[in-house]
Length: 157
Length: 452
Ligand code: FES
Ligand SMILES: [Fe+2]
Image 1: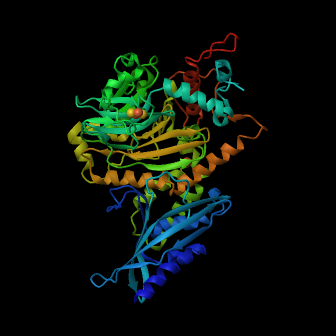
Image 2 (image 1 turned 30 degrees about the vertical axis):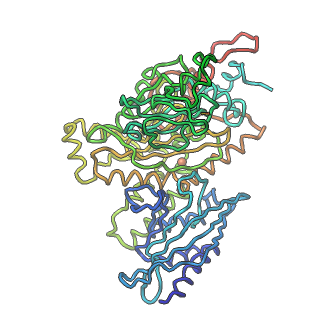
């Protein structure tokens, strides 16, 4: 993988979310991959420090299936989302451990009926190569105001 | 136009027991009267003493809409004060918590206060000499709240000078706090992290009502808990050896049938307190964590340890606005910000001396159920918001609370009832009426009929 492959991956992942192709998005995760949204500044531990989300494939699958459920009342009407990304910064090419690390500044927008909520922060990707394809080992979202009270965040930053 | 101010009769008529008038949720004037009467007359949770272990530590909080602060003074005591400078009202502390050192210093004109609130110094003090300043309220410093009680580390305060004592106000309801603290082998809880915060565009009482609303999970949460169960069943089919993950253990019980909740029971206490899950609940004894049961037996003896862990109460309401989930170690505070705006802060307690696994489970539960990113939370908020809008309809001005209602239902009683009853919601409104009009002066000129 070269730098462009990594950068393209980050853009493509966000585009998959913006197109609301949830199943395709889930397939980007490694089978043991995690989606993490910390609740503390420069948080180190997802287990014994509080997080907004720390989810594996099973839990992410529940979310994705819920979004299309007939009785998912909070998705009537359905939410939409938009990711605006700054050019991803390659933090590590994985020379030591085989883990590519990226950090990307974002503005994320999610709708709920007539309402529109906007969030800012940094997304960090830890990617590994599986059979020639990049997979997400960890996607971490650090919001600038992680400690503020939000209303619903129902889709994926 | 004042429809309710100075009219205790009109307030009392909002609560019929089997129904409450929608104005309790949507009327601006009723909301303001809650701030002026209900919250000051109640014992309100301020924070936990483990948040302020050292001299100079403080936390800020609110009683209704009034900013307060609790601080640890050098005598080791916790003092609760109004968080407003006696000079021009500037809030002395602006952060949720911190350490102020030896004294508080107002950022506007540098008046300073000891950590018990008393006035320490004023710059250029000679400007007040011979002015009569000594007779001003301001000379006393930060106004202190006298009625404060710390119970098992939980700090409560009552603003009103007159009213029920802490013990009379909570009575046997304190048994849930006891049970939660007793789950620590050391008998103590601590807060070591920030709460999960979640903004709700609905009246605060909708959240309080919901805590013992046992007829909604299998309906409103079909989308989340129901989906979790079906995704898990498929995963297990593909891989039968998989152990049930903690996540599924926490989600799945939400789909329990009506019969389960009916049998689990609801207990009510006087003054609006009560809990779901009397003889069983969606929570377990959680003694499966390695070494925990042995620690508990060591600390309490076998029988007592079993008794503590076997009491798996679901949600306990401490009227007016907190809920304690003893077996998990979670407390939620429903903080009113406006008639249709509520801040929910969900705190996790660490059981001192207990294995980390228990804390891990509580943190997980909190983010699954109580976070703005929680699918269960999404289900609930949708219902509250729709109710807040739906109640504006003039087609019917009443909210129906008749499930398992009986004529001459007692308004101040300890009782255990069928777990699908709306009795605890009614119980809360009997207390709501009581504390709203307890010392509300009647200015209508018509004689008041005694409220029950
Ligand atoms: S307002 Fe606090 S010192 Fe003036
Ligand atoms: Fe619910």
